[in-house]
Amino acid sequence: MSQVELALQKAQSECSRSGLRLTDKRSNVLRILLQADEPLSAYDIAEHYRCDIGKPLSAMSAYRMLDFLLQAGLAHKLETTNQYVACSHITCEHEHQVPQFLICDRCHAVKEVGIRKQLLNELKASIENTGFVLSSQQLELHGICEHCQEKTEHGPN
Ligand SMILES: [Zn+2]
Ligand SMILES: [Zn+2]
Ligand SMILES: [Zn+2]
Figure 1 (cartoon, rainbow, N blue to C red):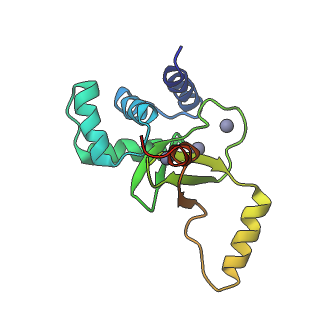
Figure 2 (tube, rainbow, N blue to C red; figure 1 turned 30 degrees about the vertical axis):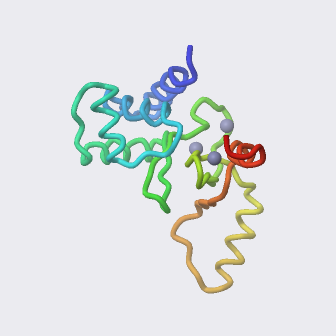
């Protein structure tokens, strides 16, 4: 079974265990996110839905499906770019940490990393010391991924 199918199956069983309904539409949107190799906007998703699933989906319904996936912890929203990614820990058994995202500015790949609770608390404390109140603990860090660094080292091809 492919990683995508495995994740979809796990998502389905997790949802029914918590009394949520992963309808076909919601599951299709999750599939699109799982298959994408970069984060997608709601409009990208509506477009993929038309092409890949062969049915129309308005951006409005895409937002509704995405809201469900966010609530269910199956997807994450990148606040800095207003795009969405599938959670990379759907098939994992461990507890989900506050997700942090490393975003490659060249290929737009996103890596989801967990951050140690202690480090996060220290960061939070030092921010709150300045009188700033955080509305989200999610970090989105931009840079160049390992893959793109390698490409640069070997020169342009
Ligand atoms: Zn996640
Ligand atoms: Zn994991
Ligand atoms: Zn890259």
